[in-house]
Amino acid sequence: MNWFIKVRDMVYGPYSKERMARFAAEGRVSFQTMVSDNQEHGFKPAADDAELRQILTELNSQQSQNKTIAPSTNTQTTQALVLYTKLSKASEKSFVQSLKQFGNPIQPVAGVWILHSSASSDKLRNLLSRDMGASDSLLIFKVSQTQAAWFNIGETADRQIREYLSSGG
Image 1 (cartoon, rainbow, N blue to C red):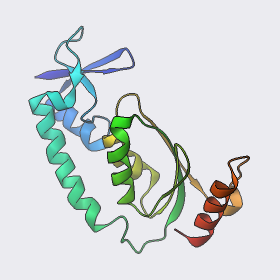
Image 2: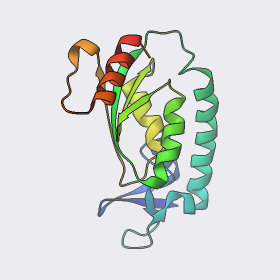
Image 3: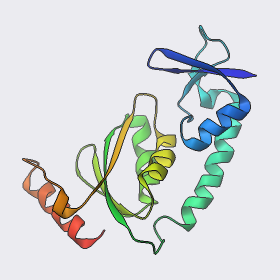
């Protein structure tokens, strides 16, 4: 069987089961990704397709096992990362749970997270995007206290950011 993927009114494909499994492993296909076996109609979340749901469930199971061993307990050097998000209510809870497995993040203002982690931004993107829907957005970039600036975000948020960046997480 082959599938088509629909992203913001654009249809891509067809893709084989093997290719969809690779896309899932890369974080490019999630349970919320709109898919169909027909290029013109019938698009539904990948979670509603039995074969894709099995691929994604197995992958999530493997990733959950991997996440619990490394990210937050790793002794490698950590880096401060800022994550800018636009999340639907449906995605927010699972996104936050996954994010916390990489360290102890703070959310100084709505849609902005700061995290100290040894995980790379690519790894974070790939794993966190699995919890995101087609209309959700994520931007990740490295930051340090001496190379960051902000304006008019409020006294509490300002203090949280300064303390978090200086503490190393």
